Image (cartoon, rainbow, N blue to C red; front, side, top):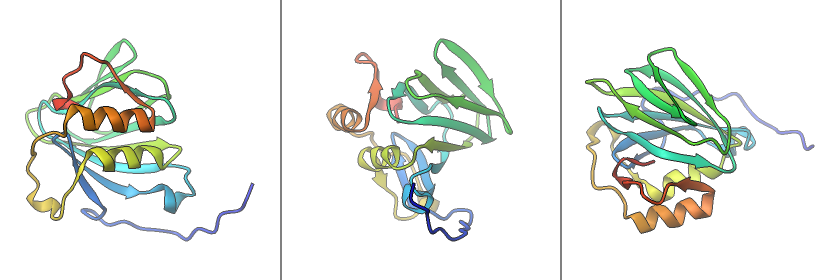
Length: 167
């Protein structure tokens, strides 16, 4: 194994490439290029009723840590409710979904291991936001665009899903 030459890194609040992904705001905090592909880290901002439709990733494990608000999380066939400070791990190949069940905005950190693949998927289906302070959800990408990107990056959605709430 080749030794990595990394330097410590600090990322301030509200800093990082930010995308609108299906109505949610996703800020890239640590990318595979800076972690030796060990992981990618995202901050997710979700408005009430929004989140991700049931899906699975073939190539990555995923961990969620709630910072603010309340989420309903589907893991396999189990539905759990998470609030601030809660954590959940989803191994690759496990069906999962999240929904903001609160009355206000919710935020969580999402770590994907290994890094790289999922950040490319999110960037491909998302729209880069020039000024995250002025974010307002827009129209979701077409189902065809999502399906092509999902196939390319090993993300599987159920064929009968409504993509307006998928990420």
